[in-house]
Image (cartoon, rainbow, N blue to C red; front, side, top):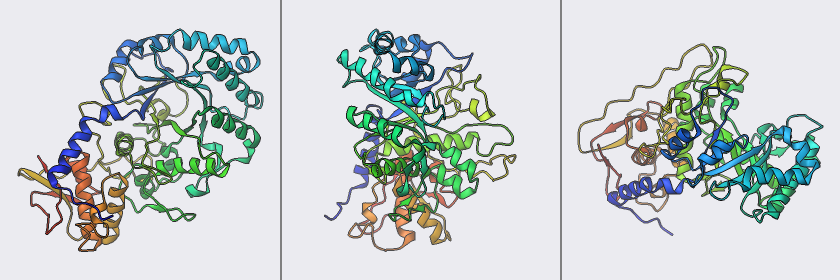
Length: 473
């Protein structure tokens, strides 16, 4: 069916409508609320902060009563956790599991909207041979306790895994679970299948960049314009590392026959600072990753293997945790400071747009600071359009085109039969797509950067039957 041409007015109206209704449609955006710190604000203040954002779900690593109570009657989904230390008792004694469910769920539910119980964190990849065999019995006993309380269909039971649960992830279509975890992992997945509970995974493009600190890898990890990476197994071009990592898990599930199991991203994030010898942490990179991730989720474009849906994603983390051990980056993932101010604007506020500004890739030398791009000033006039600068080679324009269309914008007008297909050139198609992304991302100067290959104009580039949407300054 030939795509219909939309008027510029209707496109702008659609963008405005989507932004106004976004708060009600972003149940897929969550945040991790860790407590390994001695300077966190009271739970009541934190809940007010969360309510000022588009965050719809909160993941706790335990079951802190003060936090669960503070979240009551807010409608915010709550993921609670049973610690690794609780697993032996949960596995050995169904009565203990019943008491745990009573003390940590039944006394708060349904006022506090508990949606998932995670039994343990990264147990399977821990190497603890005493704990790993007890994980499934513990999950089963918690599930049985929920069933006995008639909550088995409302509150799901899961556990969280590191990406190292995969033995292979590149290319994504070759994703496989490690045979080391064989029968134990298959039994866990069968539990998920039987109970309709999700597989919860921790993909971190940040760590992928640390292992391959090239500029092109950074752009791929930060959802910035890049040449993309073609999956040699199926020919799909991936434009960002997040999709590639999530689809590797999807491929692994499919390979073992568990196509119906849902994936939930339990943790992902980027630190805004780190130790001098750490590659990747910076304020610009953290803002780019989390801001562009949120924009990607809001687009509902999905991943190549799971199109049209946004995987539930819990960003790490709400606050810094100043008592965490390890390198400096471990204590620098917080979106907000203890005084409730933002560390940087990731576009989570109900009153803000998601920043999608590409930033200059950090050099491989870890001691060299990142130099942010200074956006060009807005031209004067009533409307602006974003177009490629003269002389940009087709290879870079193709990267911009692929990137823009991967962000969920409508690229049908530049497909064959569309009103903007002719002239059938990379430059023409890239111009249209780059402008549409600029218009939908917030119409800020930094939305028209594309690694310094684009600029703003007040001259309407529309031609013949091809209408370029344009926004007011």
